[in-house]
Amino acid sequence: MNSVPSGTPAPGLDHEAALLGVLLQRPELALRLPTRAEHYERPIHAVVHQAITEVADLHGDQAGVMHVVDALHRRTEVPNLMPLLRNGTLLIDYIGWADVAGGQPDWHAEQIVQAWRRRQLRSLGTRITQLADAADDGADPGDVVEHAMNSLIAAQDTVGEPRWDPPIALSARRVLPRFPTDALPAWVGEQVTGVAEFTQTPPDLAGSVALAALSAAAGGRARVQIRPGWVEPTNLFTVVAMPPGSRKSAVFAAMTAPLLDDGLGRLAEPEVDAVLGGAADGGYWAIGLRKPEPRAFVGVPMSVSRTGEAQRASLRSLGLRLAELPELRDVDDLQDACAVARDAPGTRFAAELAAILPAVRAA
Image (cartoon, rainbow, N blue to C red; front, side, top):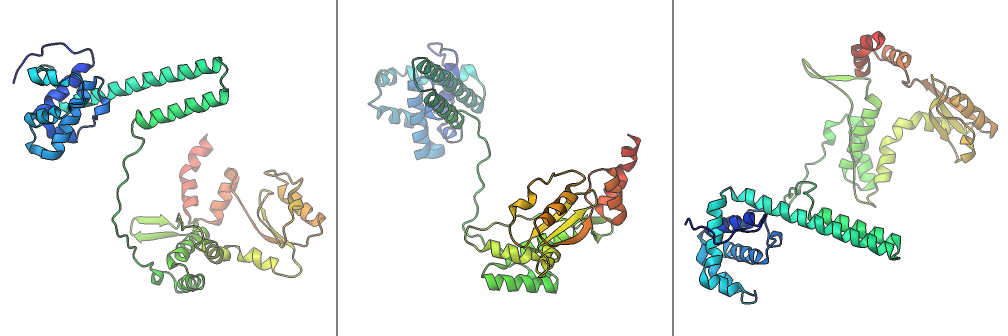
């Protein structure tokens, strides 16, 4: 049908008329386009869109313009609709505008939605202006700000673009494979199994924490050759999560204790009240106390070359018997980096430093 429209729509409404003209001829398209009835500026257009969507739901690909006419005849509550249907001009004009305007239905639909967003934003601006006027008239500024923020949040939720993709549904049944404790070294597997049985927790919990603890001990100290040409460091990053009350703390404590066994072992000695592990730059890398003592840190300057010395003096001034842990080196400058690389020549750290060292020295 190539009828010429009997009137010219207002600017912006031609997209609405053209889209409805397409949908009247192919109602099933309404189910996949982003437009909804509330997106139309002219109320009669919204009514027609609702009727098209209704027949598309009922009849699918078999829906046609006569189904839409029947659905509209049932809308007796809409004023002035019956005269437009009786003389046929309404639907004929829509189809005519679809022929004249051309363009794909997806493009018309997007223009309609964008026009609706602009109207919503103009309405938001009017609302905020009214709130500002209310503040001038003596309204509580806090209430005005709260109402304005709520209006902005509502606008973001209704007018803004989607902030992320829809979540991907998981299957109804989610079964994880058994944690492979037999793949761990025998002594680690035995500890994982023992902790899991003692705490009545899944072996996945203790096993994952064990892997993280092993990574902390081995990270930067060894590299693994999977096959010739494929070498990886022994770093591992894990996230272990369970609901509250799942006895996570007990498992974490049991599985990470070996990392601190040296310091904890010294604190267990009857003649030791505190331990301190000094760093080569004058700071320290570890400190432990048999009993809590907040005064131990009062007045101790941090991140300076005498931090370790000041911390020792503070502990001793409180009468605490101090045991020293092995001195370690942290990396603050190039000299430190070179010293660490010399101490651990086969590590990823040493390799990375060797790659950038010429450029650093040249600078």
